[in-house]
Image (cartoon, rainbow, N blue to C red; front, side, top):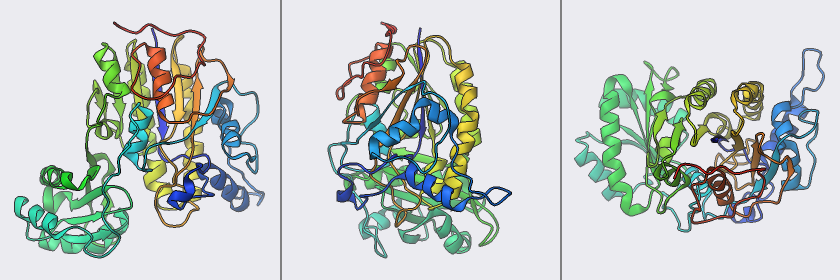
Amino acid sequence: MARVLITLLDSFGIGSAADADRFGDKGSDTLGHIAEWMSKNRKDEKGAAKPLFLPHLASLGLEAAHEMSTGAKLPAPLGEGPVEGAFTYAAEVSRGKDTLSGHWEIAGVPVDFDWGYFPDRPKCFPKELVDALIEKGKLPGVLGEKHASGTVIIQELGEEHMKTGKPIIYTSADSVLQIACHEGSFGLDRLYDLCHIAFDLVAPYKIARVIARPFVGEKAGSFERVAAHRHDYAVSAPEKTLLDMLSEKGGTVFAVGKIADIFARRGVTKHYPAAGLGNIFDATLKAFKEAPDDALVFSNFVDFDSSYGHRRDPLGYGTALEDFDARLPEILSAMKEDDILLVTADHGCDPTWTGSDHTREHIPVLFYGKNVVSGAFGPMGTFSDIGQTIAAYLGCGPLGHGSAADIFTKKTSGKK
């Protein structure tokens, strides 16, 4: 019986979507612009150009999918050899370009409503929200109250936070409220309790997530976020997702990294916590090797987004992609006869783009396995086509949205 592994490279877009101009993102292209930057700016030890090199992803159809999406070739080939996977790109129909919308739509639930957002101005949170957080959290006050980079604001306000006990609250262009506190002086459990309070308080504002952002260090310049202790408090999808459908049919869902939080742990059999690309890859391999028949392993590689996309670091992003690509054979060698691998993303975050927000882009859809018919197939008009395709293969559908692609030589029946 089959297993499906989704490796989601968070923010790895492959060209601006048709509606990108509505988001100010027309012309964005995460993969294309990283490849262009690397070809122009990275040199080897002899001073020659050192282009982006992703031979294993290229063999799954990444380069070809990018050309399908954009109509343009990359500045240099990502690799050599034939394409061995089924490839295309998918367009998003959800109203936002945020994390939850992308993941939910992949799992068969597009977001057809508008999330709430906090305005980009000083004192960006409603006074009644802040007052309630202070009262219910028994706080001496709060710091921040603005749009900010999480790594920057802890350097700016971390020392004051440790002296006063006032949490740092901030937001971004996403539908989110983030709370940063020092693990030692404030306490990790207390931070989590405060985020529970905040999650209830932001519900009337239609905010998608509250994120706990613990950090350590002694003074400004030395503060570091503890990614392994980050916790997302997210609203639940309004309909059943692929995860729900599979678990209700008796299948298994293993969630790696922040996937469990994104789906509010609904439909998740087991959570594999991990932080950092190498550790997430290790946890993905562990989960995949432990997965029984009729299983979905869903892994999010968040650092592409959080460490490189949002921080507008094309070199770091490109190097991280090469690191992932170099380890991809470990997954391929762990695959069994009926296993399917999917490499995809949830939105773009072009590191050469203006600002620090996500970008509205197509995402790669790269399927691989012995039961996959290799070659190009038609573009997906919604991310939900991905979930519907997987549901059809595992025999746990149909989902409420999307159409299954006919790319498999056989389908499995799944548990009934």
